[in-house]
Amino acid sequence: MNNTDFDLAVEGLKKLLAQPTNDELIELYGLLKQSTVGDNNSAKPGIFDRPAIAKWDAWSKLKGTSQIEAQKRYIELVNRLIQLYGTS
Image (cartoon, rainbow, N blue to C red):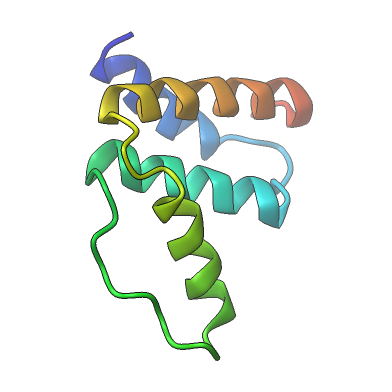
């Protein structure tokens, strides 16, 4: 795996024929942030911002995962979604 594979997965996600579920989107978000930024060291969003909390939680649970491992898992998830939803 290399950065090209990761970049292709990011682009492939944009070509899905159907919208992934909210859970799939949240998982993708966490993996993308871990892949590109690393561990989440930001403050947890306020209690009333549920979407932001879900994203923060998805990213935070990956703490300690290497960026390479997160990229690998992101690519695997995108490939599963492509199989499930198809692409244009």
